[in-house]
Image: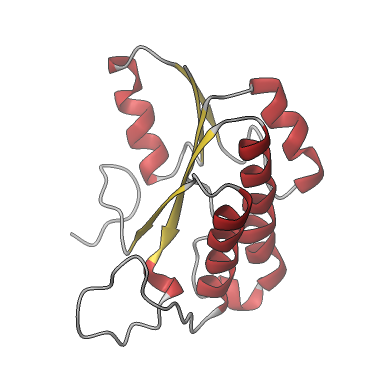
Length: 160
């Protein structure tokens, strides 16, 4: 099995890279230095070259405040690129695990959120991530979307 991990130098990608030798798979790790997903016209060719069986999509435009002033970049990375990846994965019978965020909700719930609760993002970051989630749902209904509020890791910034 060939596994492509995008966002390989982020928190989750770095953790996956660290544990990958323990698993007998062919791993491919990419980050923006190797392949920048902002170049959406190159995504199909890049994925076809690797031809993975599984994509773990960890890349994103994650700076919430900057997503307000860099709306186009946030939309390209969090929505347009994810749209193309999910189409490619469905067409090529590739499993897709997509990392998302609880920012697709408005934060007002007083009870734990369920996966089918109504979304209501209140900022551009949440909106761009929700558009990417919806693209996954639409293009590849077998996608797995993981919405998290924070990642804890031995890499990067952690508030613990």
